[in-house]
Length: 235
Image (cartoon, rainbow, N blue to C red; front, side, top):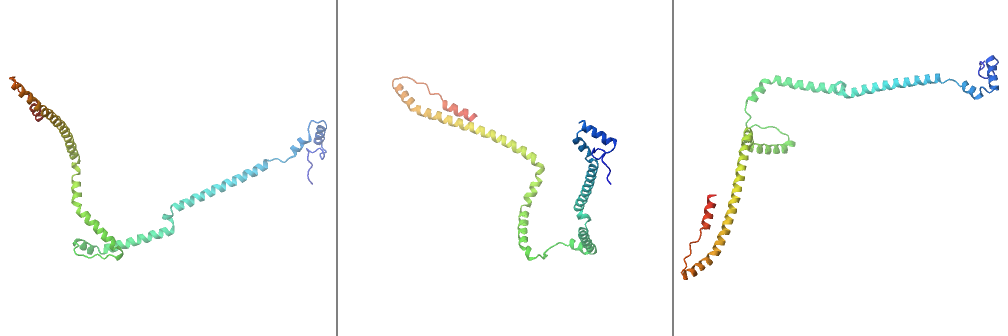
């Protein structure tokens, strides 16, 4: 049989129930306040929720560990995975067999290497013939230019001195170009002066002849053109 609720005045027969009934009658306590107090406490509900949250966090932590282990296994698969290890072991075994064969035939291989290769035929599959033709063309071109390449390599230590000489030669060339331009300008000026003198000579001769007829002595003309030519030659 369920125990009576001490907070319910209808079912309570003890002093507490009577006291609550008196409080309700005197309106010191309302029925809504008593109903709120009758609700079950949420403490145990919170405990259950906290336990669920703890279990979920533990499960998430476990899943994260599993994911990290899987990622590590993926990264190290080529090292620890059996299939990859089998492939590596097979490669190492074939290399070991090849080295053993080389060591066994060491003497014959040494003798073959000491002999010069001359008029020997190398067996090449037909699929690679066109590539060999292209390779031979490249080899011929390289051999033709080999001496030029070697000469370039030999001249590398002297590049700085050659560059300095080239800079000096360019500076001298600039000076010569400037002097040539000045000389060309002087020649053009001299030609203009000669044209002016040539245009005035007939007039001067005519005046001189007329003056001679009248008995006037004219001094000789100044040699301006000759002086200009001498100055140009001196420059």
